[in-house]
Image (cartoon, rainbow, N blue to C red; front, side):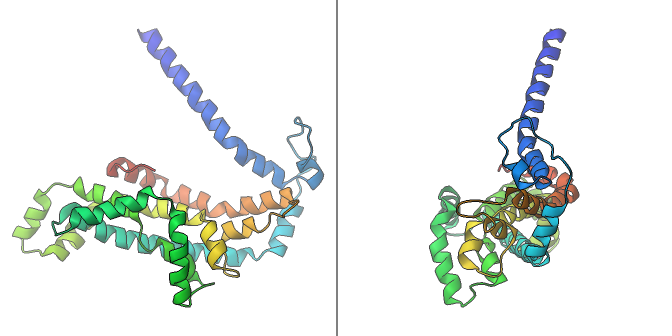
Length: 274
């Protein structure tokens, strides 16, 4: 039995290693292509993986042609705006749906679940019309607007609040706390890991959002939209495109390295799935 258990463990580890390598191949290909020439990048020879010489010309060309500082700032403001709004609204709505009893609660939460079930592209036209009527097209606010309220975050925080014991609220009520004080000083701090997880989810969703920035903005663009515009109709400079993509990955890599512990803890304790 012990030998069989070791064999099963070894097979599981082998499968996980193969899957990990498969997921890393596109990232490694992007890094290698960023240092190649156009001829090397479009070569059909499958055995030429490494560039003949490690050139920085693609990075210099991309940085000189694209204002990466503005792109980083726009992306940072987009992520910060959506994270703050999503965490704030989802925390309040999640507490209301998870701990309070009020008329129409089930119907309203069903509407939240319905929003999670339908494709997000359905809301693009109404959102565009709303931003246009407000005269906020081609602004940072237009980028943030679709993420002000998040159905996924409401569901995630609701599950986190439902997992807390009722004794906490009863003890707070006996101490003279009202609903607002109970939420702010007792319940909200206990769901901090779930808030961090939601913040990371929202940051990732905002970072990779492509369709909405291309629709609502012409000049104020984040990294994803700027990279999409680098692709030509008939041909693309793949080394420069990969160099720009590598530079665009830096914010998410830094975000993961800083918050990886909170991310894993938040998912493990809140019961949420992506």
